[in-house]
Length: 75
Image (cartoon, rainbow, N blue to C red):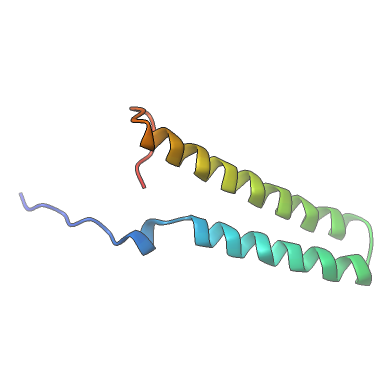
């Protein structure tokens, strides 16, 4: 059985994806704040909040991997 090579770091790193997604939600929040009100502003604001939660989870997993936790995902 052959060894499967590791994927490059740029293909497995989730941080840029989460940052771009959170930024897009932030832009949508600003635009929608001036264009409309109500549920659409709240929805885009929820996207920003969930993006920050995603960044916190990524940081938490990396810290667990650095300290050697067995259950931590390796990035």
